[in-house]
Image (cartoon, rainbow, N blue to C red):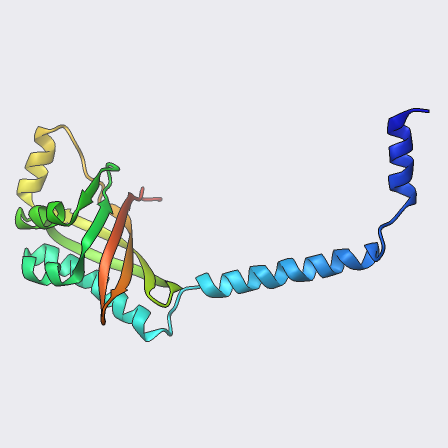
Length: 178
């Protein structure tokens, strides 16, 4: 006899114990898991800590615009890392140095969302439209570079001691869709 036909015959004629019951049970488990995952990752619009961190993300941009190194130092963790639009990784000192140069002239902060990762971590994601300083535009032009006006920024805030610190930030360019 052919081994393939024997195997097919056994598979078609036999059903594991409780076979009909396993599918609905499996489906119920999958749906429960999906619902729980969605509930954990849904924006935390009613979470007061999340709302506070959305404000802090905006404060980071305000400090950059005002070239307020002291305010920015208080918001950013010592082990801060960022990934910029070019994919370069910078640390705290590089960020503070760029702020001294006055790169950011103005910004529009919109569509913020906060997602609680765990008790001591909240991810804030928002869109921003930036206006660069004349010096920044000139420097970019000298290097044959451009800077997108619109970006999506994700900030990871981590509780350190009794305060929240910005530990990681990633900026992604957004193409305007018309």
